[in-house]
Length: 583
Image (cartoon, rainbow, N blue to C red; front, side, top):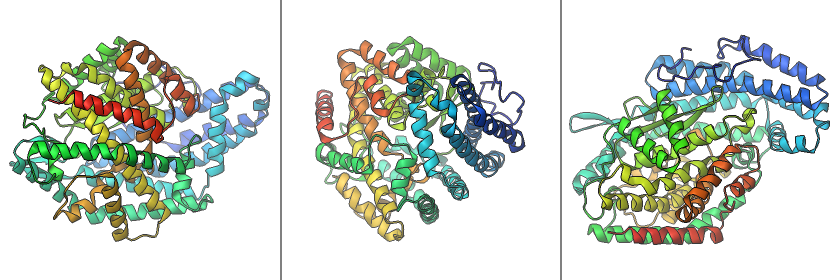
């Protein structure tokens, strides 16, 4: 596949290839298989720690190059889901490369774990490789070759979700707009305009409701079969272990649900009550959640994606000059695709190109303040990739997702101190900061809803579509107070379909809640001592994934805990800050 023209990052240039230098196409299995065979033969004969270290570097080099090929094809496809050539290239990799790679990774992991060279490691060597050993041992325990085609089919269904979602547009004022481009209309003061925009967007989603239900039913079946093949009763418990969640259990996530219900939901109910009163409406409807309750015009932080880039660069520079330099490097290398357009997949993400060791940011900016928060968020992920860039082992260049999201969410709240980059009026700065904090109050219950929903889905895999929707309604009533859904039954019942994580990354959502607690702990510290907090933040990011999750939190100066005891003072501080920013 040809390189995406927007990405100016040459493979093998800054980090020269050695083991893979003869490969010219990492989408060609005939060039890759001999290298896996060579690694398997080598690991059998290794005797010394020095030989093992060389082997690990070779394996990392090969894995990084393959992962980068995967990432580039995924980026190309999501940037243009309506391009058949990009779709074909991505699906070819899913079907013809990854299914062959997975069994080899298992064989190499088994060979590594059995290697006599590991027994010759000294205490420092064993400590250095402890996290890797634990992860590989877990992967070996879970791997079943019969699951490879099932996981391939699941990934292909995920691509179909992106294709369906990327094609969703509405006609608005004689223009065809993506659903992301409709976001500014939800902030209009004219309630009739807001309602019309919300209904148009919801109606477009409902057109694909049955198709997305069918897609999800097929995913549930595949995922349940994968779990049972691996000896698990259900996909929830399987996926928890597959995500290498060594430091907390599914029961702990239910503790998080209860803590959110106890500590956050009452504050959310109060905020929504006050919003309804300030708007002067009898009932708060779904289209009343984004508008300014004081009747002020919508915030307009930027017009073009270039302005968004420039503004966030300035914020990063005010925090730390090195961060701005890294972000500018991304801009110069074409490692940003920010504007929304037809055919582009929904949402936003940061993907790391593992061979060149550089991040790429994808999003759908539409000119709202949420876009500013999104780019700050993805920028935090990017800085994590830069911080761990010199780590030689691929496995340690990324951290557990619970800490990766601390990197991104902390950057959102750090950026609150410099929003005047986007707004000239101090009142708008305060308003934007207040809105961000209110959204933090909203996101905790939403995370609990999505996670609890998945628990039920995969513990009850034989449920009907109607039962699934009924369960969704129960959870939204439990965690989402204060909204009137009268005459919107279909819209409410299918609201979960817009959460792409349910389709693409099952059970990857609780991480946001755990990380948000960590990020807000950093925010409390930042308000008192920004320099020291940023130093702790960057030091922890530089560890990559070389330490267990609780150690990474500790390195940043925060607690790895998501009980009500830890959540309560954070929520109280957020509530106070919201009140202080009131007009």
